[in-house]
Length: 326
Image (tube, rainbow, N blue to C red; front, side, top):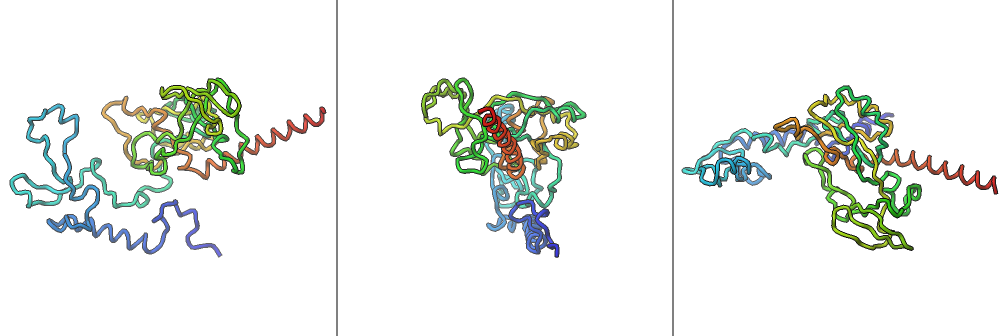
């Protein structure tokens, strides 16, 4: 008998399972809290507060402050974004509409209003991109551009003991190396609300010399030259990836995602953070469009297995040929 709620309906969010609590009780509770916040005094109760409701904040941005100067009456004033009051009688107040996008209804879970097949900002997984340019050819608005980036190939992301470990490249003098960051911040990165480049997972360097189990590298961030164990490094490469995107021309059709044979292209669930005051602001550089492999781990693992199988078969053919010649 088929399950009432198959796994395909579960987006992975802890509250995405379609049950009575998530579909009825929690939305009703969030609606009730939103309604209670509209009442004077009641809206400031502790159980209705979060990071923005009833919290006083400086309601002026740095650009405006620089423009109007420190002598302007608005400078230095702190008010709650969702409450209207005055300096004369601060104890009298009334609720106001949350000023989106400066304040957000963070109580509402994204899965409630952003469907899984929503076409948001374009995202690219560097580790699996092969620069085949299928996405560039498929784009009807010519908004995709290839860039050269230093990245770790998906075959080199494995660790000792993994099933597909050992099918990647080797460290070479004159090449590139990557050292995984212990605290990259990738685990806490929220692709939908961050509106910034994904955190770097590696420190990249140029390999100057290899001797035994030691490697002398020059870090690309300018921190200098260092000699360390080669086991602490992963092979890296400078390759062409699909990165720079002109969102001012993009119509979010998703043809680039459908044309990618390696599933490196995704339409993310980022529904805002894609506006600016000029067309130049709509150019998303490669680091801004990069998607972490952990975001779509299943697809990355599938591509890893497929490429590792090819490398395994290639090695088997080479070994058979060597045995036949010997």
